[in-house]
Image 1 (cartoon, rainbow, N blue to C red):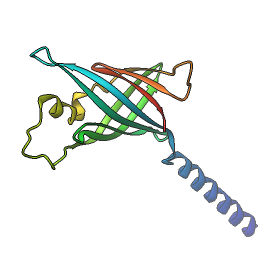
Image 2: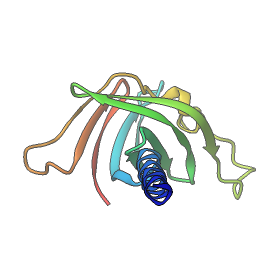
Image 3: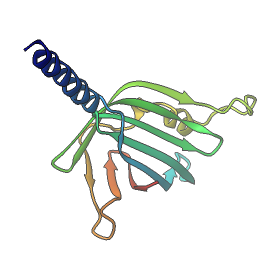
Amino acid sequence: MNKLALLAATLGGLLTGYLINQSVSTVVTERLHSDTRMHVITRAEKYLTLDINAGLELKETGEFEYYIVIPRDIGFSAVGNYSLEDGELSLNITESEPLLDESDSDDPLALYEKLVSRAEMHTTENMLAFRPLHNKQALVLFSERGAFYFKPR
């Protein structure tokens, strides 16, 4: 009888450990990348064209990793929790870090560069998200200030 109880306790422990491991797994559900071109109108009615390199990882645990980088290696990286429901993606940023290239410290940052390097300047709540018909693994994401076409890496 003791052997049966010991076997049941061992199997129960193994099953519990397996289930806990599955619930805290950091396996990436989706790893996406975007090369986007943004057009900015300045006060002097001049136009700037910026190439944006963005990445988004959505994990099974409900966590995400997100970054945006523009020329001169300026941008930000952020982590936090996300929800994707009814075609809307919300990113709850818990930590973010600006990315600023120190090599040209004599050349001051333009206002748009300062804004891009701050994660809180990017809309992250209730962004419209949908899968295009031609590529169900891609994600088109509309924020308040722009749109991104994310494709699998």
